[in-house]
Amino acid sequence: MGVKINSKQVQRMFDNMLDIPNDVMKKAGAYFKEITPIDKGNAKRNTFTVNTTIKANYGYAGELDAGKSRQAKAGMSNPTIDFIEQEFNVEIKRL
Image 1 (cartoon, one colour):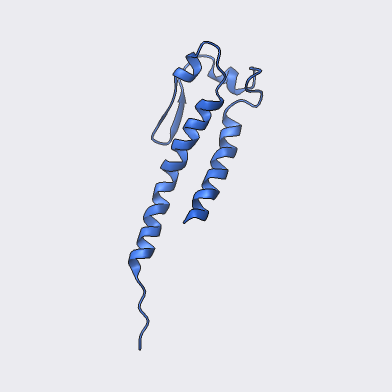
Image 2 (cartoon, rainbow, N blue to C red; image 1 turned 90 degrees about the vertical axis):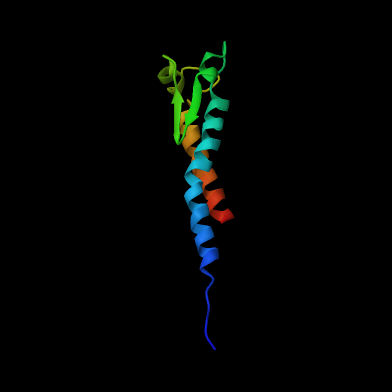
């Protein structure tokens, strides 16, 4: 009598783990854009995610991220980092 381990399940788990950064960053990009203050829509219109990078392509992004807007007193980066940590934990538990 021997012991047999099915490596397909382990490989599937590792494959799923490799997807976590892209999945989490896609959600984080949407979250960042959602909490971006809106006045005329330029900031939200010029915020997008490329692979695992969130880009805020407008001149006053630093000011908004520093909390100089009543709509985002904590900026966008710090709340997004907190969101990433939460989503990462959710994804790990899901495995």
